[in-house]
Amino acid sequence: VGDFEGNLGLLKEAYQAGVKSGVELVVAPELAITGYPPRDLLLKSGFVEGNLVALGQLAEVVGEVGLIVG
Image 1 (cartoon, rainbow, N blue to C red):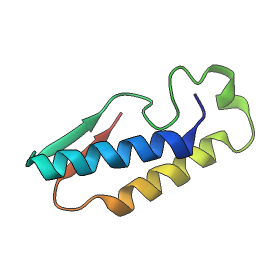
Image 2 (cartoon, rainbow, N blue to C red; image 1 turned 180 degrees about the vertical axis):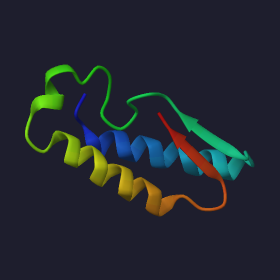
Image 3 (cartoon, rainbow, N blue to C red; image 1 turned 120 degrees about the vertical axis):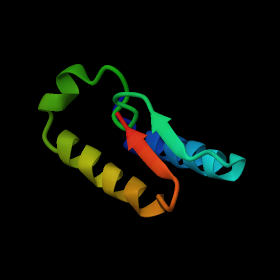
Image 4 (cartoon, one colour; image 1 turned 135 degrees about the horizontal axis):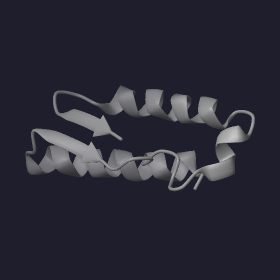
């Protein structure tokens, strides 16, 4: 929980594996970037911003194959 870098790495790996295997869409579970459950981390300064930054970094690797992050 709160490991944006680690979770982002796992999401990127999963996305690339999906692309390599020929899927049309990759779907990640809810809170895949923040970890589950974030609870009081949502109240910490910078936590939401960190999530948005990680989401932007993830968007940079998405190509023709779609990615849904819950």
